[in-house]
Image 1 (cartoon, rainbow, N blue to C red):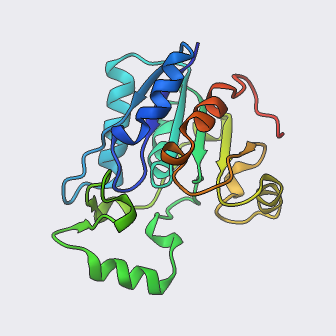
Image 2 (spheres, helix red, strand yellow):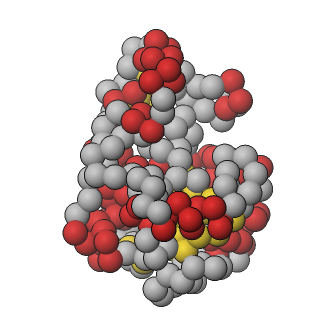
Length: 220
């Protein structure tokens, strides 16, 4: 059986994964959903440290490390630092951005201006569609860039794509698109629909995670 560590995207906590965790555990797997610190001023490095602390405190090994959206920045930076504990890195509608790029850098100048204007006391307000689940997110975490160690390059990867067909994503990987350039050789699987499959299709997402190969990736 597999040990999954699940890192949420912006505004979300461990509860966002509850239905995915329920399904994974019913299949006999272990799952650790993270509640990241969302206090003002918390940056990406702090979230990475939280993730690593969970792995070390529980002595977790051969972990499938899953990051959704912003959570992809956390797992990208953490995975190489503790590569001996990681069996596979999984991006759910996310990806390993180029060295030094932040989540904020992926948005247009107009969106960046709107986000800056919305920040209150160092926090990005929760969007309306996540009001029931979300909490304001620290702006500092989304403006800090990702960093990699050499060990990261040797880790098997999977991209679960929700917004684009798998064949289109494979083409973007092959062409060296900056958002996908570090996914050369990764598995690419589809869960087409909205950006939050842990809410809209948790059983499908859990089953995809449970079916991931444990060895070297091979596209399908």
